[in-house]
Length: 185
Image 1: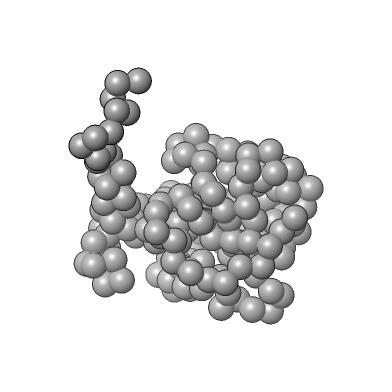
Image 2 (image 1 turned 90 degrees about the horizontal axis):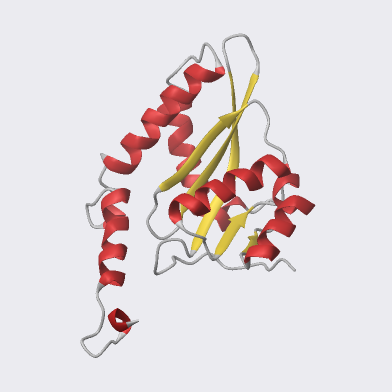
């Protein structure tokens, strides 16, 4: 079952990721379909995956790799695209206990974090580069993602970069109450 959910800012990393696709072309006119994934709490670009095509099975393999690298998330917010509503995604989410939040058709403002990110990505990266190949696009996009996460402070994050802001969540969760017996187990 998929639930419609109002947009709110999560209180911890990996609570809600927003995902979407953004398209571009290489110099020879071939399509590039990039999966963009943003952590709604930290504003980190969790992933930007440029490919020629990304179907449902490919999408869930990407999500499995991200879950191994970052930990399993609690929920994903997407539009109603076939990859996000297909059997592969629904099965993947159900088996892992990940909630799926779908925005209403024609209401991109309900997925504002990813829409804002994609606008910035389009303006600052895709529109600024002429990709000679898919591999060239991957190199440029990876560098832009690293810069976005690690070198660009955001006012909405108290002047921290998304990566630095994400670390504040880790440090908060590392601290145990003085009466905790967690270290004894």
